[in-house]
Amino acid sequence: MTTVEHIMYRHAWENSWSQPVSRFLKGTTARDIVGYVEQALSQGQWIAKGSERYQVRFRFGRAIGVDIHGNLTNTIEVWVQNGIIRTAYPVAP
Amino acid sequence: MAKDDWFIVECLLNDLDAALALEIATAVLQGLQKRSPLILSYTMNCVDVDVFVRLRIVLIFDVLNPHEFVWLPLSDFMRILELRRQLSSGEQVLELYPQMSFVVLQSPRCKAYALSLAVLEDPLRASQLQDYLHALTQKDNTDPLISQSLVLVDQLGVALNTGEQSNVAAITAEIRRVTDLMASECKSVLGELSDL
Image (cartoon, rainbow over all chains, first blue to last red; front, side):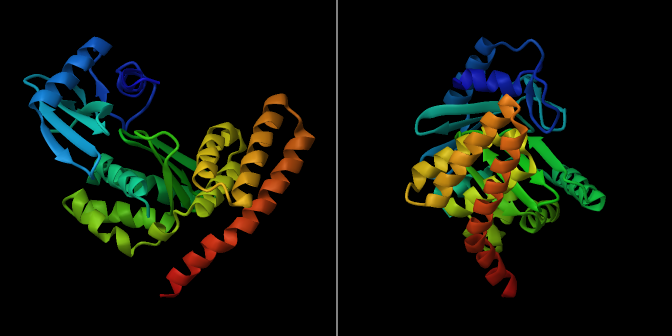
């Protein structure tokens, strides 16, 4: 499964998971998510989590999804490991 | 505990806030009162958590790294939930992890033990958990009990798919025997710690 497939499978609005998993807003496309991730990686805050992992957070000017409790949020969290994007999802700011 | 294992428990804290910790702890306590072979499953952002209530163990699967997982005694898991409710940040909980017993339970054999217990509790997950056992055999290909578990769980998956009930019973009995053999190493660690 590619990273985008993983994100869509787990964090798309239409998925069947119940909470506590974050979701992108209804209608968000894979292309939208790629755009969010690119913006987060270029403008977000990078936090080292060990030598090979980074947690990147970025706040957009608008809601992009809901957090684990179903609250609207404008923040994305991206995980990068060994230079590869592993996952991305909305989080509470 | 390996770096990847630490990362999984860090990820759990990343996904967990005080409200969710309370929600899960409440569900587990309710499950314990029912005393049935109950499994509570949570799909989170970075990890998947399966609480085997009757067995009193918790398996935490890494979403970012396929086939990586850690397992915890339920008591450790409940302590983490309680600490997350009490402390203002996940980082503070992380500092207390070294005091918990699960950090010395992540050897390949103990992980295989936990997986085998999980298969015995929920045989329909044999195919899913088989992949994790396979990953363990690649980490430690010298442990005959892990290899034996893998073969048996593989056979169980096939027997379940083909509906061979007599085979299922025989294979399950064999998995139970191998699991008991693996138990000593892990149980002794738990025993030593609980004596402290």
